[in-house]
Length: 62
Image (cartoon, rainbow, N blue to C red; front, side, top):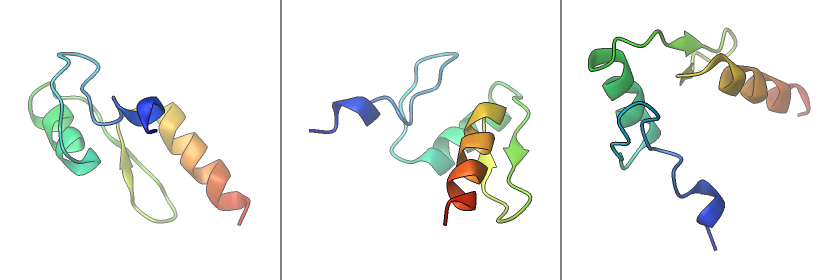
């Protein structure tokens, strides 16, 4: 059951839902003019700094 990730691609400002995280990033950047943060290692984009930090910590475990 995937109930924990049900709102993974949902805008936290207007509650619009997207089929992919990339679409959510595009929406946040262009509709809400949200600053996007990038992973310095792989270039993946995140809406929140906390998500980028989590991504980098997970990468450090490998």
